[in-house]
Image (cartoon, rainbow, N blue to C red; front, side, top):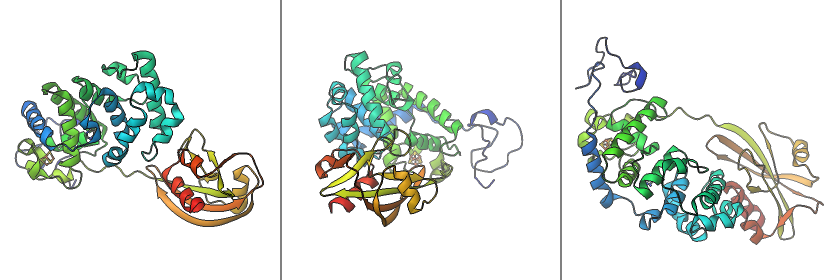
Length: 379
Ligand code: ADE
Ligand code: SF4
């Protein structure tokens, strides 16, 4: 055990050791006495004083409304802040409230979602808008229970909307909060350790109960994690919580939390075929399940193993001529490594979606497919 902190140390639930001999010599810490926790009141006070002057100027913070909070929090679940910031006002311009989104329809929401990734969220957001109209007269509900009943809204999102938009005392825990809390309490565990995550929900709850403004407190925890208590190099010298931070005191901030176990990416081979006729290209919609579900593509064959030309022709499901390879590249998704083997062909088939540039631009596509079409068809 090379770690400075015994992994069985008492904060992580079931294996609190109440007897045994001390095995390490960190100042002030022994395996027998759980280290006193930080003071919630002063932690909260420092954060609430820090946030207003130091928070980033982000579109959803300039003008606040429950609908804007809901949309931004759903977007921010899996997409970088800078990317959401670039697209937020455009998106809100198309769908200024739940009613506008409900009547615009799912396809319009998915198309406007382009560039934000994880398109399932666009469908869930549209479904949430419909439900908000049907059940709540078009107004985002304030209670955590009603929020949790909305499609796409889990514990984190419900807590963030209830607290930020409605001032409710509901805790939130995301990756930023996990890192900040693990460091404040010097909990030596992997960022996705379920005991650590449970512990963070407890601490977040303690903090939000002590807050003067629950929304400000919750947002300040995330903001501190994003801008000061950063993953690799925390800026402890700029941190309002330095004096109460156990990891800072022990000099272990950058080692806490430990990395998540590495995700193993599954290899997938994708064979998109560029089929042109005049100024049009043949496109089709991907299946409802799997990678890029429901998005548009050039007709493609997907396989766990490399395919030969005959297998590609067979897999396409319609007859093509003059099939030939034109380029290969690789893209990493969260859980997959996608090997693109791009082909070109012609066909006599007339059926299908033959799209010109304007029509293609209105269809939602995954980013690699969009750039492939732009590169191979229109340029
Ligand atoms: N990540 C998700 N929601 C956020 C927020 N409201 N502020 C900062 N980072 C966030
Ligand atoms: Fe994070 Fe450093 Fe602040 Fe502790 S002192 S909360 S490690 S930035």
